[in-house]
Length: 514
Image 1 (cartoon, helix red, strand yellow):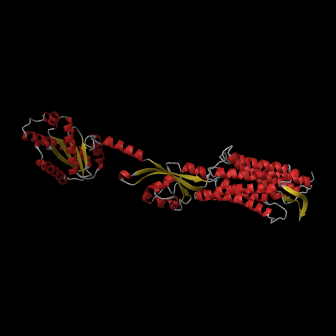
Image 2 (image 1 turned 90 degrees about the vertical axis):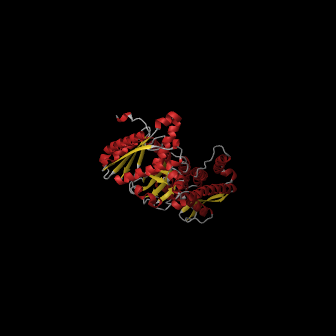
Image 3 (image 1 turned 180 degrees about the horizontal axis):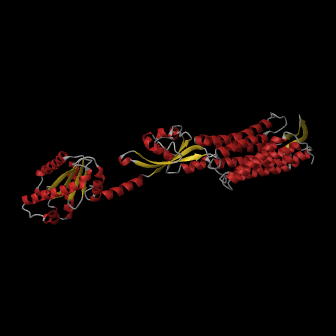
């Protein structure tokens, strides 16, 4: 073979080498869906570019025609692999053995066979001669009918693949939009140059600059590959995974501004993606500024927030995790909102069961004891009231234990109505109740007992058998440290009141007082 090397071959060789490098890196570093199609696309570009460089550097016509035929391996493959790659990127892969797949195989194979046998039918090119244009010696030709069929097929694949990417551009969040724009740019530039060449307006007369412009395409795709993480998680895959999560996902930039939210997060923060994107996270969570203040500053943080109130309250575990680039610089954060409402309700239920009496719904003895310990450091008076139900045993013996249970619930209802909401009202025994009144001195405690006596007196309209009868005693601890002594005094006072009640009703004394 005779060579007449030209400087115009250098950009083509550079484009080919870059394409091979991108293909190898895609296969080695990105074993994701679409990586094989992307690598195949870049290998095809390399064949086209290097083949054209060798064509331009060949001296004889037959030698140029040989390398022109070699180029067709890349020429027929590039649009096909581009189309397949775009579909995979958009989450619409070609199904094996489908009509589309068969067409994508058949058209390139037919065109390639016609390229290598063109001298017998002239369907691709005719009137082939050498022509010197400036410093270049190129093949002058007239395109045959099948060339235009192949061109139409190639441009159709280009258009459809690019349309898929354009749709992704509008559909993707801001986080992925730059990635998709880079891909569209990488696709359009070479084909614009190809259209310029076919219409006879090449900036280098007689030279097809399409393979050289694939270097620009390679740079754009490399930008998407390494700067935006192409194939790490394509938008379609991201949509399928992130959108299906029941947990809320919010992506922040390095200034804690929202750049992406998934549907679950939209529901949680009650804002659409378009309303949330661009706002600072602290604004979205303004009601929880104190709880989350450190989350927008720390690289990794956790907190818990409650949205709503009452039965409509929703509890979320908030996890803020950092995002780093390849230089280990912080580029943003991901907020994960995990619904822990059921767990919270279960914990609350366990706490309630462990601290409350199941029959009366009042606090139980264990909780009452803990409260006396907790108030041990209370710097102020604490009133203590002990209440015992009179005639409880007689009620159980005469009417049965269900009637006794009903009586205890009625007493509990009366106690909750009489005492303050911040008073600790508990059932500490079978028919015995106790109340702690934080901050109540002698006057306050006596006032509370008088309210209780008035509530009992208000039962005059009820039949004797339906009236509640209670024995009560009280004492006041001057400070929290004296609560247990006041409890014993109130208990003794209650038993003294019970004996007075027994004596008034002709009942023998309680043997426990002997």
